[in-house]
Image (cartoon, rainbow, N blue to C red):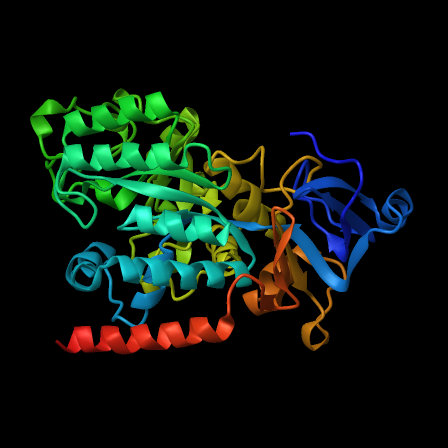
Length: 443
């Protein structure tokens, strides 16, 4: 996309981490922004000469990174924090979270919870997220109104849920919402298979055909594909309709035979992924997403094989993870998998953008890309880094040190203050829902 040749403003941090084409740390560099896009990056003095008179945002003790990309999130669940969290994951979802969500589910809950979640993510430097919402139409409207970048999951299942009453209704609703947002530059859609009760082979095949037609991403949680007991089909209702899996993957072979494993497919749940599953996903160009805080807290059986290193990071539900905080997820991933800090930060930015099919648009600081940027103060309590800036960010900083965030060149957080939302109104909204849900739980 062509951009203007005159900068609207310069961002001048102490350290610049472009993330591409390599994990470099540049000092005394600046980024020029114009028309919502990155016009140039280079030595700050040179850019000031090239674009005299433009506004300057000087952050003398800060690091500037691409905006974090949350590859799997449930922002509406910000309102469901405080529920008891006891693993294992499948039991907690079935016996605790799902019943509460069914009782409380409404358009108001999804709208208000998503607003709170978006505000929290922006404050934490997250500029793009993939939403797993029970009411995707409501989630999409909130994201569109906030003018943030989001991919909204379209649930696919063979039974009834809060969005549709059967398989046909799920596909019909998905196609209608796809038409509504087809030309929206910020709101994308993807299919989120939810086969906990068992998706038929016919539904999986229909999903593949529609994904082909729309060039759509498909995601599924690996736990949802695991057999409930030995000998049972891999999360499907009609076991006889499935081919017997060959050597290699125990859980993904059927989806491979249906042609679903390919670029644009994402498997969620890297910590419990088996090495053969990860190898199969890698061969097919599919993404493997880790949500380490939720996975660990829900006592997920972990393998932590180096072969299962994730390609992107998510937060999953804040009811389990506690926060929509991708910097914390990157820190946990680095510790669990033994990753160097630059690689962990890359997973939280360009890795997420790649898994969502947005690497040409976001995920790194390069000319022509959208100016989705996050600025982090590294001089809190005198802890300015001496040499390893990436390590200082990953292991020394928290989301509270995010001072400025830009989404497509628009300041959405400035000097730690949200620009898109009234923070006092958000606080009162959260308090009202806490009281309402407490009454619901008591009833």
